[in-house]
Structure formats: structure tokens, C-alpha cells
Image (cartoon, rainbow, N blue to C red; front, side):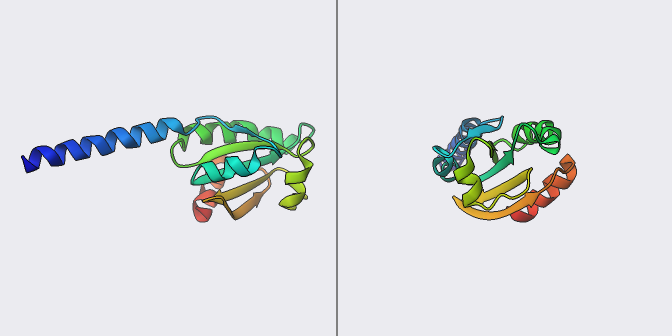
Amino acid sequence: MDDLEKIRQQRLEQIKNNLETRSFPDSPMHATDANFDELISKYPVVVIDCWAEWCGPCRKLVPVIDALAREMQGKIVFGKLNTDENQTSARKFNITAIPTLLVFKDGKPAGQIVGAFQKEQLVERLNKLI
């Protein structure tokens, strides 16, 4: 009976992990001044992309962030914060250049990445911060 119980426990863990992964979004979430604190505290690791519509490098980063949100689902949740529309959060985190990625771990700032990077470079930098 012990072997059967071990198998049952392992299977329950697998199911639990799959459910947790599915509860993580696979695309960037919309971050605002109003939901910012809730968003960064809801998941273990959150990366907020601070951007603006007029910013060329920010637009260049869109497909990279979208791809990372899918590929890192279950590990990292990505959000997008329009700094023109959400100036309170931008000031709070001293965003003076965009694109800037704010990295949060357990609801607390873990670092930031300023500039538009290729996907591989961005993954390398994120892995150092988380």
C-alpha cells in the first residue's frame, strides 16, 4: 500500500503543478497605477515592462515580451505599464528612460533592466535577477 500511496502523492503533485502553471497568464497583463501593487504581489516573480506608445525601442520589445510571457509561463508573469498613462507608478520607481523592465520577487523590487535587448540577452539578465 505504501507504493500505491507514493504514486498517488506524486500524481497529485503533478496535477497541482499543472494547475498552478495554467493559473499564470501566458501573455502580458495590463498594469496600471490602480492595480500595480496587487499585480506584483499576486505572483512570485513579476516583470513589468514600462513603455509608451511613441517609443520606438518599446515597440521593438513587444514581440520579445510576448514570447517570453508564453515561454516562461508558470515561472514569471509579465505586465505592461504605459508610463504616459500611469505616471504615479513611473515616478514611484524612478522611471527616467524607457523601455525599462522592473523585476519583482515576492512583491519586492529585485532589479531593473533599462533598454531594448534581444530575447537571449534579456533572458540572461532576467535569470541573474530571479
